[in-house]
Image 1 (tube, rainbow over the protein chains, first blue to last red):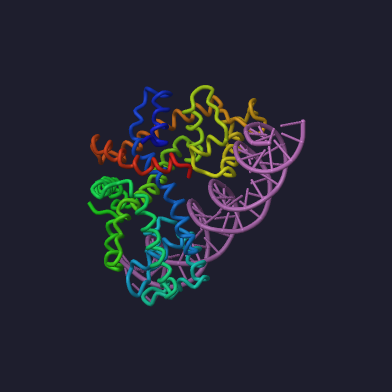
Image 2 (cartoon, rainbow over the protein chains, first blue to last red; image 1 turned 60 degrees about the vertical axis):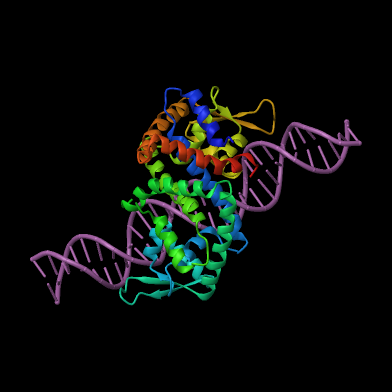
Length: 165
Length: 165
DNA sequence: GTGAAGTCTCTTGATATCGAGCTTCTTGAC
DNA sequence: GTCAAGAAGCTCGATATCAAGAGACTTCAC
């Protein structure tokens, strides 16, 4: 089946036959799919009264394992946002009672952000909802195809994730 | 090579062994790669004094072919933003002299957005820069792998692009 | 023709994000 | 010890985005 990127590439080949636009076949699809996913995630989370950014922070803490706490700096690297944004996010999550700020006993500049019991519950429940949603989207692909796709994507993400960028 | 999603998935398997988190192998990589791409694109466009959103609008018009004009509604579907955002973008591009608004002769509710000569030049030059950048990122993959990846991604994007969503 | 429903673009108000700079504290050379 | 350099998190101003709704116009059934 054709998609929007097929149409996009065909347009460029007509308008700029001198250029090799083959890279767009992969990377424009990645960008567009990500935007569609953002919308789908927003919808899925709204059933749990969570915003996508809230999910990102809560699940980062949940994944850390007991006692479910990380520094703001560690949260930055996992969520790819700036420090000002993270301060704001922690403020709002704390106001909702989903996380709490504690002083870092080993560094008085530092802070630890800890999940509350309710925060942990919300993280667990919304993760299950997200996975259901994602399974529906991936239903187009066989299990082998999903593995192949994951492997190819890993080759593209690894340089970004391993070289400080 | 390992990437951040491998670590993410491993954390979930440790914390929530009861859940099947395999969908994240694909879709979390798509989301994270898209964020990395946004940053890389921003850098590439800054050499041409363009923002990513300006590139998106200008090239949509460029691809339309002579006389390089589309309605705001057509631009919406190509760029996946809301109508308020598009109004704002057209305003700013018009102020910079890269596009101009014309009344639609066949529908008095409507407007046509047309690329100026300078807008067309900027679109053409920045596209070449983007393709160079993207080729560098895709250098990790063989030609056959890129084709395979594009095909798998198409299967995921096609439902979004063809069912009104 | 007329009215209801739909379409297209723009306006408005709220909000999340970024970038740059600041304050407090830690580290390491001397 | 002391001081400079660096790191951690926060504040602030500017900006782009979205959601919801308004206004103008078109379409279609009757």
